[in-house]
Structures are given as C-alpha cells and as structure tokens.
Image (cartoon, rainbow, N blue to C red; front, side, top):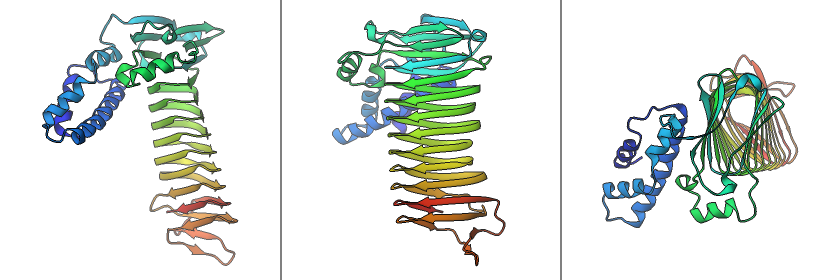
Length: 357
C-alpha cells in the first residue's frame, strides 16, 4: 500500500481499541481505499500523493464513528435485543442486506446492536426467539426494494447504512446457522462447541480466527473466506458456484464442487476433494491422514509439504494425473514419493487434470 495513503487511513482509527472485529473492518477499509487510490492515480497523474490520499479518505464517510461503534466504544447504539445464552441451543442469522459483524462478546448475553440505521422498512432487523432458538432476521426484500436502493447507492460499504454488530457470549455452547442472501457477514474470534452451518446464496462471508466442532458450508454463489480456522471434526463444503478461499485451516476436509473454485494455502489435516467442473488449488502445510482427489472435467492442483512421503494411487480415463515430485514405481505399479510413506494420496481424473507437486 502507498505509504502516504496508509498514514492518512491510520488517522481514522486513532484511539480505537483494535478488537478482532475492528481489525477485520480496518482491513476492508484499507483494501477498498488502496483500490480507489490506484484508480485516482491513473485518472489524475499530475496530482500529488497527499492530494489523492485525502480525496480517497474524504470519500469513505465517517469511518472513525463506525469503527468506534464496532469496538463498542459508544453508548448511543440502537440495542435491538439482549438475551441470555443459556436459554438457547441454536443461534441463527438470515441476512439480506448491509454489513454484519459477529464476534465474541462479554458476559452471558447475546447482544444485537444497530450501528448505523436506515428508515427504510426493508432494512429493519427482527428477532425471533422461541423453542431455545435465537434468530436474527430481516424482511425478505421486495423486487426493486433493498437491492434497487443499494444499487442506486453504489453499494459501497460506507453507503449500506445498515451495520449490525452481534456479540456471542463465550458461554454459548450450541450451534450457529448463518444464511447470507446479500450483503457481507464477518464471523470472528469465536470458540464454538457445536456446528457452524453456513449457506451463501449471494454476497460475501468472511470467517476468521475461530475454533469450532464442525462446519457445514453450502456455497450457491458469492465468495467465502475461511482464515485461521480450527475445526475439531469435519469441514464439509458443497460449492455450486462462486469462490471459496481457505487460509491456515485445520480439519477433516470433505469438499465437493460442481462449478466455481476452491483456492487454499496452509491446509492442515486430511480428507477428500471432489469436483465436476470446479477448479481446486490446494497447498498443504501438514498432512495427518489420507487424501483423495477426483475430478470430472475441472482441474485440481495439489502442493504437498516438501519432506512428505506418501503412496499415490492413480486412476484415469481421458484425464491426466501428473506427479511432479521425484518418485519411484514398484513392480506392482505402486507409486511412492519419499522413503517412508505415512499416508496415501488417491487421484482420479475422468476428463480433467490432477497435478501433484
């Protein structure tokens, strides 16, 4: 990032406690601002860096006030609901618009705060709590309602006018169900004993710095990021379309893709990845069990730890499986990488290609 721009942006966060949620918000602001700065440089090549940086910052809106609210440093928020976590087995969010931050709270209560509000009824937030089920939802948008309004507003983060913060207490031991139909949802700094059940139909979800028993993710469209996530059990994902990015995630992976892409770095664990027309790029930090990769027409590229030793079982018809590591082939056609295999890699290519590095 340009140093002049960074210095101007840092001023917006002066004096604000950098919680995990604030840090996520800050990263988003910096990323958007950097992109805008680059665009302005091309449009106004004779302007100084300071002039451009100040124009970018001026166009961001009142970032400092929003960051204060997300950090919990203001008291004039609209407190929609407070509810004791011991009364609930499931927390559910059904999101249609705006930007929602879900993070670890203090005490024993769920707390739902409206950081920025909009008078439009279609931005309203509702609470449904019955049968040990705590649900945060919004009215389903009408045609030309919320989406038309957001389109007219340009759909920049600072124009959404609907920022919600949800605090989840450490004492909550149940399951979490998140459905994203539009907008952005950030889930950070949680330690969950139950399931994280995620459905993404459009928009964006970012899951960072959490520990969870299991994850079930259905990605219909949009983009999903999982970063610094520790899953004690299974991470099951079904990608119909859209993009999934994994960074430093540990799990028993069970992932399938009809289309779209899954791109991963620093994976830890074992599991199975199956694709039809989807593309996978998977880089592993550690492997603690068998791996299976199969593709119909998409491509899978796998990078395993440099010192890893393993068996490779290959099956292919019109596709291709390429092993780029030094390997030996035994008399009975078994492929061995390294001297002392500790796990097995199964690679099955029908029409697509699988590359193992």
